[in-house]
Image (tube, rainbow, N blue to C red; front, side):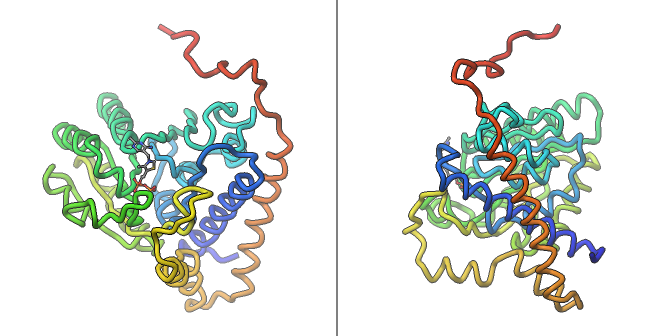
Length: 321
Ligand SMILES: Cc1ncc(C[n+]2csc(CCOP(=O)(O)OP(=O)(O)O)c2C)c(N)n1
């Protein structure tokens, strides 16, 4: 076991990938219903975020949210159980893979594109009112950043100097629409200047670059200097959802991104150059995969909610005053 930040990122990213591969197995067996979106290929973003997040920070994610939940420290077994619609899930199986919510870690997600931003703004406003140095993080994709809520949120956060960090996973596509066809300017981080906010870009495939960018961004926001946008270029390896034929991306483009832009392979190459052996890295990867396989086996055996209780725990039954 090595003890370097890059080695830890490698292990975390292997675990994240194994987690989502387990979800893919569930979708293939029709244990998971609806459109399952994975972040396979985008692990460096989540791993780079994970090391800077504190438990009291809030993170609001999107339809592609599993890795962000893991980065926020949501219990893995309970998150997987939620994705598999089990009574033991963080929302007792009522939220499913697109609407997980975990008050104990301030993690939530929404399937409404662009809606992560105003929810995170609410957390940021609350943190400012309570004079806490916690950070509210909104994840969005390049597609989500073209939503009106992006502008409204950043304007308000900058006007009130709120502790909001907007992380854009720019994987170049919103379903089948290339970002360049619908986005002006192409640099999303440059939009920060219009709000008087901080903006930065990094290679979202390079976990060390993400870690560095996040370090600067969290220092800025936690230090009370107002909102920050971090734009991370990355690739989504799978189709938009499990079942998407992905015909809009040429085969060569898909092959090249997996060959040249896999954050796990990039970290692995760097570790080998630093003297870590391939068998050591293989053993670490296998150990994470075995662990996740154990969680998957347990989750599969858990109970689904009864149909009669479908509306239980969905609506607020009592409001404390
Ligand atoms: C308000 C709204 N419009 C449309 C959709 C359908 N939809 C789901 S995901 C998606 C694309 C999102 O693209 P992006 O923000 O780039 O995220 P990515 O899928 O690339 O992670 C769309 C249009 C939606 N869920 N919500």
